[in-house]
Image (cartoon, rainbow, N blue to C red; front, top):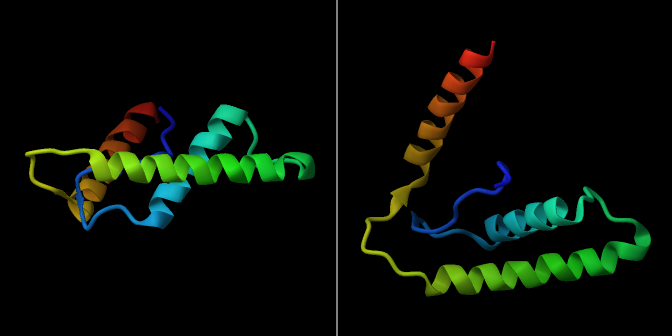
Length: 91
């Protein structure tokens, strides 16, 4: 999975529309292979991002879990520790 797309489900507070749209944009970029579409493809690119954003919101709203909601700050700290370990080993 693309490293720039973050897990959005089961967080408190819930994912914002901006976070969902950013994930959709990263997905479309990855699938299309285009970081920035040409003028002729801009409308198609934007439509794809909008549709994936809507489907993602529907998915997140429909998912259910019994697990307690995760804290964003705690998860961010864990990710930083993992990154520090990963990059320390590569050096």
